[in-house]
Length: 335
Ligand SMILES: CC(C)(COP(=O)(O)OP(=O)(O)OC[C@H]1O[C@@H](n2cnc3c(N)ncnc32)[C@H](O)[C@@H]1OP(=O)(O)O)[C@@H](O)C(=O)NCCC(=O)NCCS
Image 1 (cartoon, protein in one colour):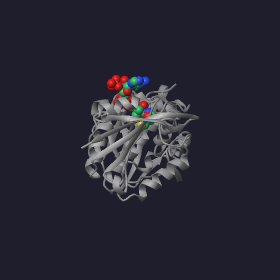
Image 2 (cartoon, rainbow, N blue to C red; image 1 turned 30 degrees about the horizontal axis):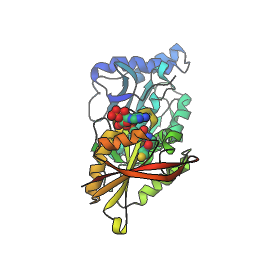
Image 3 (cartoon, rainbow, N blue to C red; image 1 turned 180 degrees about the vertical axis):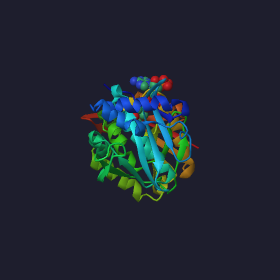
Image 4 (tube, rainbow, N blue to C red; image 1 turned 90 degrees about the vertical axis):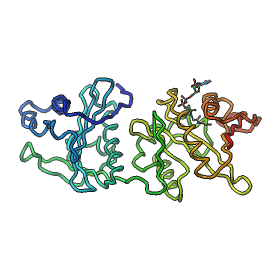
């Protein structure tokens, strides 16, 4: 079963009772006996009076009116937070809700400038936390069951990029700097033949972990980043960028973008390309942004046309891609 990437929002005090029930149902998923679950009840009870307070972050994943899961965070110091709870409704376990929640928590903490997230996890969830980028640092006795030792994990958080940090609110999404903590969602969305087929050969397929590491290393060397992530519901699901040209072309930039296939057809790239092209022209003092679109890619041509780019001509048989020689179409936006 797969669930679309859920919407994540702050919990409200009125939802505390429901979240307590969800935590108990979720814990029961691991097959624990009833008396064990009763022993955990107090620890799993969500206190309505804490929701909304400054030292307690509580977010829920929803699909319409349905609550799919939630997490809560408490500060241990200004830069270290503990994941107090993270639970997913049993029928949605294994559908990506948990990962969306943990990534949301990490992004949330990165924005606060936190450096570490500590997790005392259920032993059954070990693989889940490791896949989310955690490493085990030790074990700790359970607060509910004396003598039961639980693994302790830690996720290192890279705070917001302090260089020219960009944040363009495009309505349905945000354009902002890439961060290393985007790696999981980058790999999930970027490794797609349909995307590779429409981009230059520097874009790899399959898109591997070492490609992602190289991408972050490339960006980190830039004094001013010229490529940005497209964030939807807290996850980086695409990229947009500009490459300023040199010498006599120095007031020209090459514009490019891609979006995870799951997000196509919602107007996201139209919103992004409009805002990012205007931003790039201004930030890099360009007077011309050009994009070369492969002849088999009408969706991208449509995006550019909707964002003020003008079709300037066809470069016949200019592209050698995916075993074919094809035309490309040159679009440009000038100021
Ligand atoms: C091209 C891409 C970025 C589009 O993103 P998107 O968010 O789906 O785009 P939008 O929803 O904003 O707009 C797509 C437009 O193309 C139209 N479109 C889609 N498929 C089309 C097709 N086969 N023929 C004609 N128009 C098409 C849509 O109807 C829509 O136009 P409309 O709003 O006038 O109806 C996305 O498909 C992608 O990442 N592709 C792979 C990488 C790529 O092509 N990058 C660009 C290289 S130049």
